[in-house]
Length: 165
Image 1: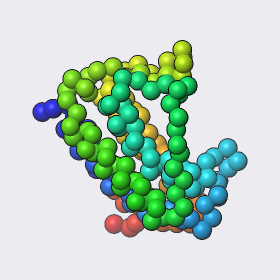
Image 2: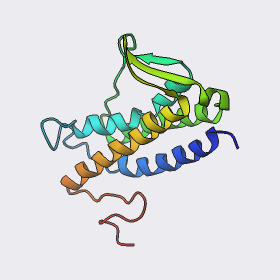
Image 3: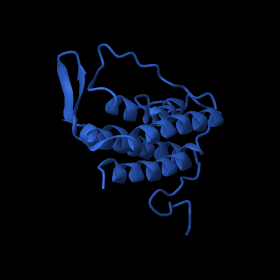
Image 4: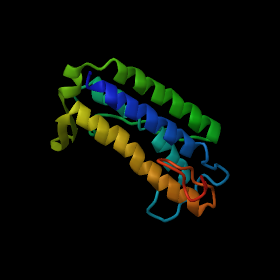
């Protein structure tokens, strides 16, 4: 079995769960935030939708330097745009991961800001950490936002309190 195969299966499965969560994001009050230090619901959901971009950044370059890389953040205007962007980026990430070789997956990838190195790990670890776990982390935050907005939270690994069986 190639290294990318179990990771691809996990990424696809988590993508389906992420879509379930993103489908419920309301945009009637996109600037809503549960706390002054928290992201708005628009920014958080848009960030979740764009995280899969990291797949190609990790697999197609040896490093990313925050000092030289210019991010263009995505801000969804409505739920349809959010889901469309998520699917587009997720599908691109699937294609890149499908074609990844064991050699690529084992090669070291570096995340830095100038002289400061944050991570220097094998790509397969960075994909797990910076793509899959990152999505799961923010998806958990989004579930709290939905709960506070009185929106039924979909079950992720079984039924939620809002889904009885």
